[in-house]
Image 1: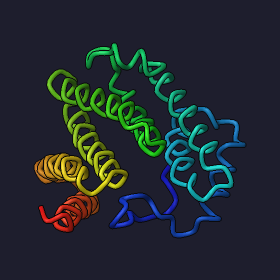
Image 2 (image 1 turned 90 degrees about the horizontal axis):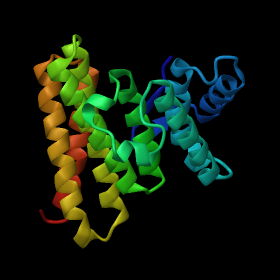
Image 3 (image 1 turned 90 degrees about the vertical axis):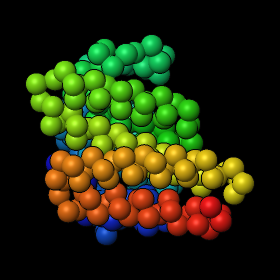
Length: 216
């Protein structure tokens, strides 16, 4: 299952769907289906609920639902079942299968402007991905998760920069840029697809452009 056709806004780095009504209909169909709470379905429901929330009648309620679904997905994959458990988890405690659900959940917290909680999950996912990259049988898969963690944590830092006064934005943008650069290096190193490389280049350029606007 994939998200409906969309692109990243080059300024906000948020998803923009080509056909919002169709995306909403697809989300409603998934929520009604018998497999609505299975991992493969949650892998679409969580980011789709999050990304469509700003246009909903009650965006906060939609983001709360995305968070609930996100924790469910993490729990089903054997990961921590709440933020307190995540705060006390170590890389080896988090199953490899839980890393992608953790990243999706971290994005939801990011969009709820709960950045410290999002940072905790992004950091845990990155630490675990690095751990499995050294210890797992599927090193290539773990490395792909590592650059996803770097890339998406970069988006979180970028979002934080857009939420603060210009004078406070520079450190966040600098961190976002550093994370995007690391993600790009890893993607090129493992011969990622042109589309994946292009996405990170777009994100890197967005961070550079915002820094340039600040005179950095």
